[in-house]
Image (cartoon, rainbow, N blue to C red; front, side):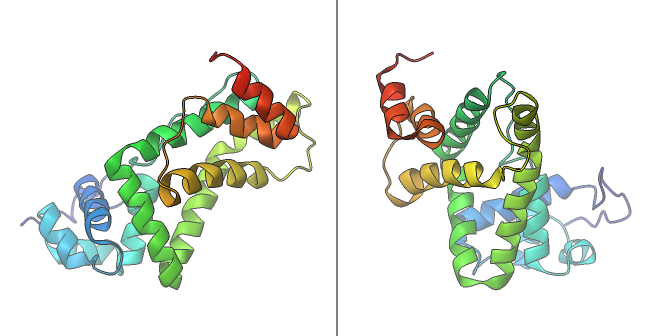
Length: 204
């Protein structure tokens, strides 16, 4: 095992922080939050456990940084020229992310852990707030185009869209069609009639 605390990586942390983050998320996906340990992460990443403890005193702090900074759950922010187009593209990206078995297992383990452990619940909340902040340009542009009032809370749309996908894929274990995100966005923005029109429209 190696100890590379003397060579900080980009953004702070040990030089092999990428391997540490990957090991942490691999073990979370495989065993859940309860069985995740810093010792296990150190062994999988082939680093000394003291290396990890010097930067992350607890597994929840390590996991928070891994979720936020590993890039595993990241995707490019869409800019289609309309709020509906951006939300549809955003929903499609979430759909594609959850279609990946490993990424879906990470998300599931994080959500299950959040139900049982306050530290994990705070971690997941912090992660979702971070993602909402990264999505903010979508809503800034929508306000500038007159599609949303400046006082609108964008978390309502994000939570509703992500919740529809998470419930469908993670809880009900049902697949989603190519037009699912488009229909969900139409339902959110235009009501039931709009969703029906979206389902009848040919794919763009």
